[in-house]
Length: 307
Image 1 (cartoon, one colour):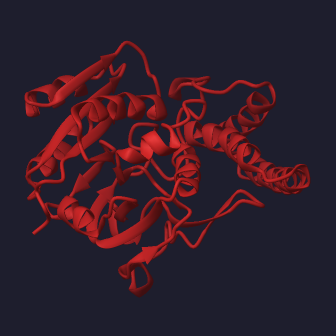
Image 2 (spheres, one colour; image 1 turned 30 degrees about the vertical axis):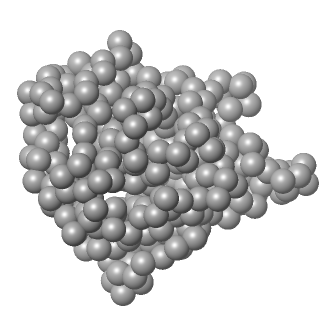
């Protein structure tokens, strides 16, 4: 059994999650790990989901924001509270997941003082498929590598992997001292790619990332931003933030120029495919993402209803 002396602040950023919040709460209540405290940061929800969380977990810390502050800022609010309370770990957890009773115990067992641990995340609607990402990142091209996202669960995803470059903070256990060493999440991302940026900085401070397949959760994928693998909201922020991420960590001007050339060639190809398939909203979202990056518009710029 995992050591109960290691305390965990479970940080949940809530945004209009009424459609699935009851199942989330029920699964969280069934955890077999004893030493955790829920920290809920509500990002201006208007659907009653925060009231459901307050009713389900009256003992939790509930922090209401008057507007949608985004995932990165919401997580930072939870990190500040967890640091003040002196917890050992922060567990970032999306509200559109359903967790298994032993997942937190398994993450703790796989952790060390300098290890960020992420679980196996399967699609909620198809437990045969891997959801989100955990694996490598090609900094030359700004591409995820060997993350198995969208692929069938199998032997490759049943083994522990260490030394990863990226992992989704849909669910991630992070030693809280990492935020003192590497700084908090960069709020200019608002959401998407902020975890890859943080992991890059944490690696420079001596932290590593481990994938632990014995810990298991199920994910609805973009549950609070329209649902599905790719939405206009996700398209916009993923496009804009990908450029920002690579530029932020580019080792040289030639390296960034190489990425820029690759990015434009592939985005032109993507635009032509969207035109052919009449995916007007995705095309508009991608275009706005590119334009807003070059205009210097970072942080929260567009909402779900804007796209």
